[in-house]
Length: 84
Image (spheres, rainbow, N blue to C red):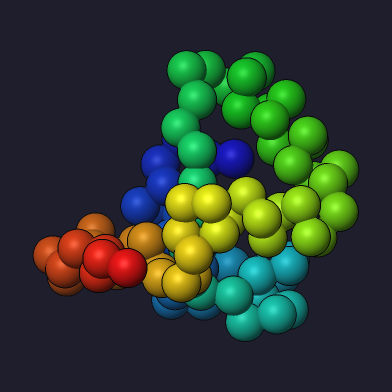
């Protein structure tokens, strides 16, 4: 959860976060995200998603991003997500 997704993505892409899951697995693509009205709602949703099995998470990602494009690419260089 973050209140500034673009800043958080730049931290991941520039490896400014030396520890944690993303550093350990060299994760730097944003394939799914949700916007919430407030922090408590976001925390509830984050805990819900973390409790899901991997297959259910993959199905959720592929429901909006079947090709696993990096959704943040368009934020930093102006490109849009290619159509299917």
